[in-house]
Length: 130
Image 1 (spheres, rainbow, N blue to C red):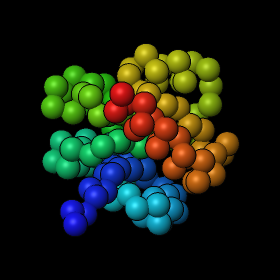
Image 2 (cartoon, rainbow, N blue to C red):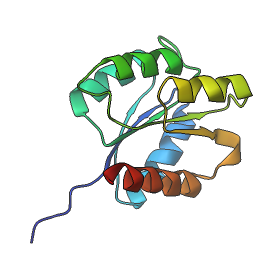
Image 3 (cartoon, rainbow, N blue to C red):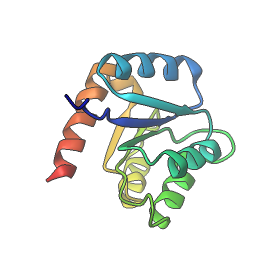
């Protein structure tokens, strides 16, 4: 019997505690998780790994999340991969900017439990398959 392909997530986040927490939750849900601790490494990982979905922080060293999002959307090979911004920036301008740059979701870390983030990812992936 063929083994079902795991959903591959790239988590681009500089907070190692959050990376550990989310990675554990996603792996328990059957996802394959790859993480990068800054925007520049994250961009390289996305191009190499071609994940099903990307979780992207905004405030990071090397390259912020908005710059990463711009670079992803300009690259034809990875432009169609859905990106969810997972950040503490909750200002209306930031949310608007994120969606304008092509994010499919915007989650404020303090407002969502990891299980809710998993549910949101599943919902977005289901919508993108249509």
